[in-house]
Length: 188
Image (cartoon, rainbow, N blue to C red; front, side):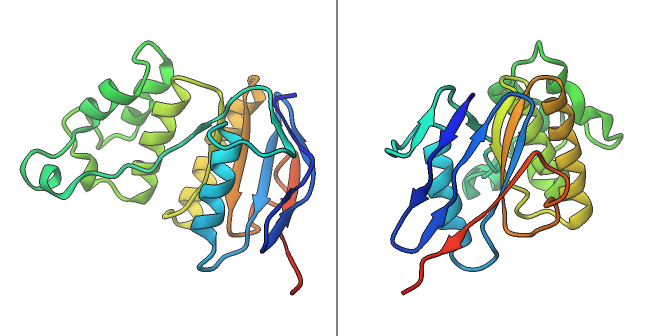
């Protein structure tokens, strides 16, 4: 067991108990709205082991698939290229480090800031998967097809001994996961 959640309770919500084991994808449905980002970051910090919670046992730290953010000055004068991003953020010996190049129009010199939501998200996902197979991720900023493509990549990794927690604000993956957990709002 990688993570054992006995129930996370805050002033505003409750996440029911669940376990995460190797070969599983847990979808945490957080609902859509202005609360999503803060709730996602709060839970992410618990599951990756940055924040301790008395009701969560993290036997193996997970890695969050970060979103690519480039400082404005850098974007204007010396944009980060796909090759540079991978050299800095990926294990270049892993087959995942070069998977982004299967998209025919992306090469080492492609500027990351020119990538749309899905290819940009896949770049950071592949970089993370080149280092670990146990991840926490979201599909924010992607269209429905892109979110589905990202989820397929993660499912493939999970079937090969990985594990994942999807922090989501839509119910699309409800019937395509190992465990589905829905945030419960506290009654006032």
